[in-house]
Length: 72
Image (cartoon, rainbow, N blue to C red):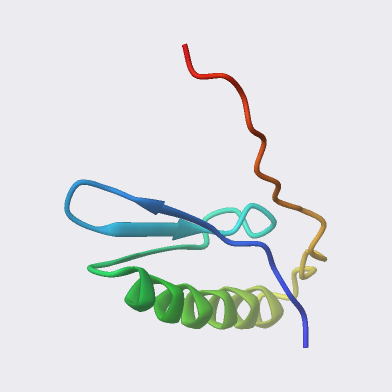
C-alpha cells in the first residue's frame, strides 16, 4: 500500500480534495466522507492512467502539519 497526503477543504456548499504529489488529481463531494471516498477512487484512476501511458508514478513526498499562530 502507498499513502498519499490528501488536502481536504470545506467550501460553502461542498468539500474538495486534491493530492499535491499527483497534480490534477482532485475530487469534489457534498460531504467530507464522500470526498474522501471519491479522492481514493481518483488516486487509483490517476495512477492507472499514468501506468497506461507509460509515465512514472510519483512517489509520495508531501507531508502535512498544522501550525498555530496568534490571530490578528
